[in-house]
Image (cartoon, rainbow, N blue to C red; front, top):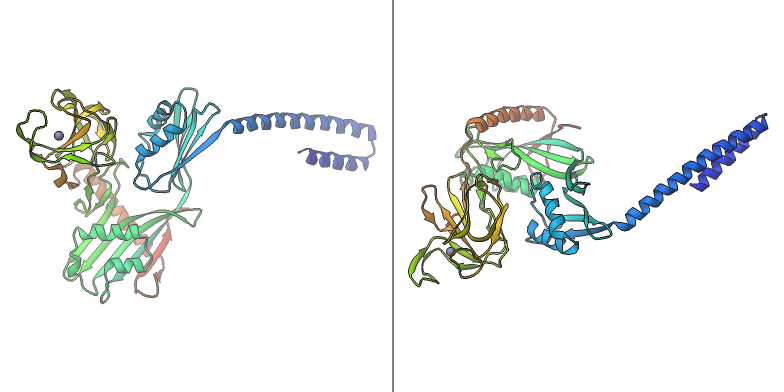
Length: 442
Ligand SMILES: [Zn+2]
C-alpha cells in the first residue's frame, strides 16, 4: 500500500514539474497527499479490526463417517464447543424446516467459534452448488440458503436391446452414472418383466444433469424412461415433483398415476439390538405368558428415536403401561408405535418425515430398563410383527396431485420433443444407442 502510494506521489510530482505554476502544483500535491494518507490510515484501522476478528475465530471441521446420521455428527460437534447443547440446538432449530440431512460419507461440516468457543456460524454444503449457512445474529441464529448457478443439460437416449444384452448393461456402457441406471431399471422393473425382454425391444430415457461452472457434475435426475417390448408391452415412467420437495410422493409414476417405487422403512434407532421379539413370551414382571405385540430394542436412556416413515402423529401421550408413547399413521393407514420413551418431541397432529427424531429412549410405564418398544398396526388395526413390515406402499396419485402429474407429463413430453430435435450422436462405439443433448438454461 505504502509502496503504491509512493509511486503515485512520485509520478504525480514528476508530471507536475513539467507544468509551469510550481507553487500551485506543490500545494495541490500536499493536499492530495493528505487525503491519501487519511485513506491509508483508515484502511489500516479496518485491516487491524479484521485481523483481530480473524484471530478470534476458530474453525472446526468435521467429516461424516460411515453409517453416521445427523445425531452422531451433532453429538461430536457439541463436545467441541462450549454451550454446545444450547448453541447447536438453536442452530438446528433455525434450519430444521429448510434442510434435510441426508448425510454421505466424506461430507464436511464447518463450525466457526469465537474466542470463548461459542458457535458463530454453521456451514453445510451437501454439493458444490448448495450451501446451508446458519449465522449468529443479535437475536439468535439465522438460516440462509446460498445456491450457486448451475447449467442444466438434458440428454435423450434411444436404443434397442441387442443379443445377450440387458438394459442395465447397455446404460452402463454408454456412461450413465450408476445411481441413475439403478433408477431407470428400478422404475421400469415395476412394470416390465425383464426376463421376457427380447433383442430388438426399444428403450428411451430422458436425463437431466446439473453442472457447476459448466463441467463439475453436481447431480442428475431421471425425468422419463420408456420400454417397448414384443413380449412385455409398452411402459412409460414419469418423474413427479410434488409441491413439497420433502414429500415422499416425489417419485416416478405411470401417466395414470401408479407409483413405480416403494418407500423402504427406516429404522427407529441408529443401532438395533433386539432384546425381545414379537410373539408369545413370559412377561418379565407379571410372570404370565403373554403375547408381545412388538419388538424391544435395548438402548441407553436418551438415545434418539426416529420415525420409520413419513406420517402424521396420532398419539403423543402417557399411560401407566406404555409410559410415554407416540403413534404415527402412515400413508397406507398402517401405524407405527414407539413406547416407554423418556421424552416425546412431537405433538399430536405433527407431520413427520422419514428418519425424523421424535423422542428419546427411556424406561417409563411398565418397564424393567431403558428400551424402545416398537410396534406396528396394519391398516385394519391389528398388531403385526414390525420386522415383517419393510415397505409402505406409495399409493396412486389422486385429486390435486394427479392433476399436477398430468401437467408435468405434458411438460415432459414437450421436453422430449425439444431434446430430440437436437442432433443425434452415437453414445459410444460399442452400442447403437443414440443420444441427443441440449442445454436447458444458461
Ligand atoms: Zn415391548
